[in-house]
Length: 308
Ligand SMILES: [Zn+2]
Image (cartoon, rainbow, N blue to C red; front, side):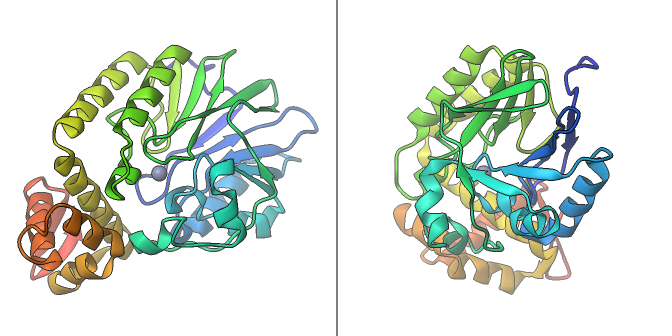
């Protein structure tokens, strides 16, 4: 990646519980914009990172959420309290945010936490906003989330790809877990990204990267495997959510973790859709956990499951 690629951008690379935060610096007399704000459990860290990242005389005047999964907007409320920033969201979730419907917003079915926030503006696909010398065009990027946006600065060829494209793959295709076909949308979004001819990608998780063609190739081969066997994607999705849960709690005694598979609505829903494998959500959860253990994603010590 050349030195100018992230000119006037501070990328806070966070990990998996929190999405990356991308601070876009304004020019003289202009304030900064933050793309995505992480998970609620990390809100204090997000606040500290933004405070440290802001330049002298700058404040945070705007937050733009690419989509409203809990790991992308969990810092919104804290950032508004600290900076008075205005929040712009994709239009598809506006009604659910206005009435704060945690079911439609996915927090209730996934068992994830969030602090309520309100939005001030919509960012619609096709609209653009400028920060400093860069202009970011919003594109609809359905698949991982039906309402997700990606943001492209054509002049520099910089793409903020959210969870539509990572260096290795893409986010769980959540509509598919609800029984809504969305693999075609993932493919169309990957085609859209290819057509943008980006030079740099700043993903929702992981480091920024420049080899976009290879990333697209890996994403497409992963998608092809899911299309060939949708149950593989469904198992992957629930394993990813169980791992996410463990990232939040740190570690958990095995019986309590198995209870997560019974208590978390989306896990039971997928279990029923797959034809009730192993006879109970808990037994099915145990088999998924064995796969996570075998893959090294989690570790079992003294009857307690840890993040590996
Ligand atoms: Zn997401």
